[in-house]
Amino acid sequence: MAIRVEQSVLIERNIEDVWNWMADTSNLATWQGGVSAVEDVQGEGPGATHVEVRHVMGREMRSRVEITDYQPPYLMGFRVLEGPVLFQGHQTAQEENGGTRVTILIEAEPGGFFAVAAPLLQGQVSKDTEADLQRLKMLLEGG
Image 1 (spheres, rainbow, N blue to C red):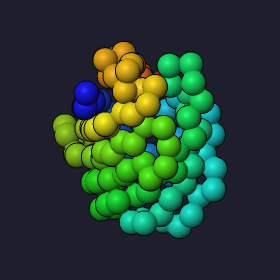
Image 2 (image 1 turned 30 degrees about the vertical axis):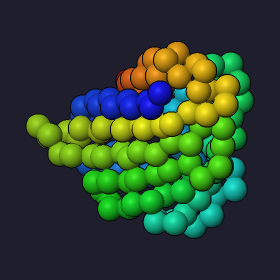
Image 3 (image 1 turned 180 degrees about the horizontal axis):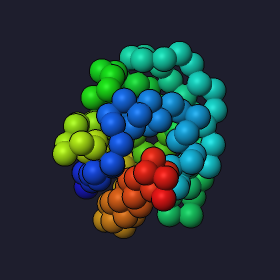
């Protein structure tokens, strides 16, 4: 079963501030609740990689992520090169009503343990992504 999750939030900050904060991998563990650490950051922009340590459904996952597309301040594409769940997606930012609409799209084709649990994983990824975007909004709006 393929997984597809798309969530968005409107943040009352200008697009440059939002982009600069989201694109900085050192901030990932602050706004993405499942990320406990970011390690081995290599480069910037397209082709850059880093390792994300996440906790999904009670299991630790280490995934090497590659930046596939980088168009500041509007689009950052990514894909997992190594890890238990190979996923890809993108983050976009659009100016809207004086703020910034951030949208995250994640697509995956889970294998192994996660293939059996795909329906549960879909729901968990959707809830986690929504919570991550709300956390990002709170952090950037100063709430």
